[in-house]
Image (cartoon, rainbow, N blue to C red; front, top):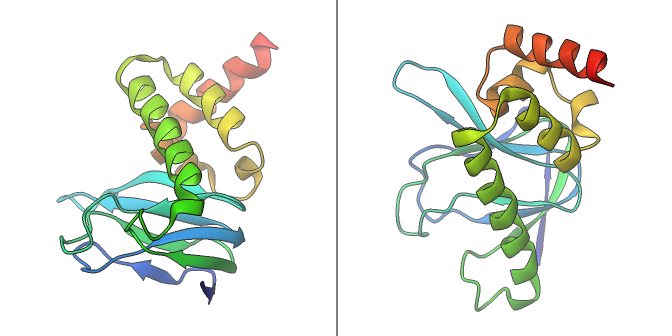
Length: 156
């Protein structure tokens, strides 16, 4: 298994890259994101310690996502060939479950429910990333996130 050490801000995958990998975070924090044709960034997922992150495109197809380090990070590089990564298959399945839930929520849940799910899924991240990144992940503006957080305080 190959370990890599990344500096905060280091990009390890660009949109369009071929032969991409999957990364299991030992310590630190990674994120994946998409940049649309207007230049707007959309955060797809975060990967704190113990989480796995990657692009779902086949290794020979161009990557759809960027992956970068939000903190100094140590990660293990994994192959996209699950037959070679049998011991890590459970991590991939867990990631799929989280993504499926997120997509369903983005399609149907109010912003406050999406925020509650974010807090449950990533309990320590809200203090580690800027609020604009959380808003991007939730598919709302930073202003809307502020309103959601205020509603949550009054609800408690």
